[in-house]
Length: 314
Image (cartoon, rainbow, N blue to C red; front, side):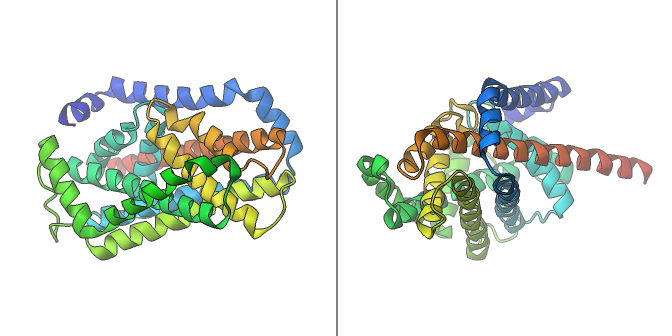
């Protein structure tokens, strides 16, 4: 990790990192541009706007989950610096490998006097909490509104439920200590020495709420394309999206789970809409979240520049 951070501190690598991340995001949109335009024509404007707003709220809630962990580690951040650090680091999701957003957060955190080991811990734990809570939300959604296309994989969903025990602070703290010894990193050395029950609980609550909002974004798109406006549809979309995100994340060779997430989400919604509408939905869902990620990164970059100018003026 120390070698990775040393490489990331090079200005050339930073700009190359940004160009690569933006390139992967742009590639996804450009490679499906004709399909995206056709999808936009078929979707009512109200559904697109509501889904976009829900996507913004979803990313903001994941930011709050990460921010609450960072606060528990002794580094409270105001909203502006938090958006700057989180927004730019999340571009790392679009580079294959699954760890670049964590490495970027560690480097960017130095500007806010956050030790690299604390930045790595906060982002890693935020991702872990998202994964575990996503499995729980997905399994619950599948239990309430089962999807025939995923019936053969139900055992895998329920096998992941015991992972919820990882959210218990005593277990999580032991895992952190073990991982830090393996990676030969210095101990976290926080005020309390470990993560608190309240800190983990708050982060998990934000993460669970984020999954509900993200699923509702997909549900609005589905209803706009002709799915029944029922609780069953919303539950199916919430559970389906959570499972699709988890599986897409674990497939680390794909940037931000591109392709994998769409296939799983389409399978989760099979039977709810005709196949053409499902393709439209999964494409628009990905494009909206990509646009929101880029928007947060742009706002974060602007906040960083303004903060630097204020410091120079002072």
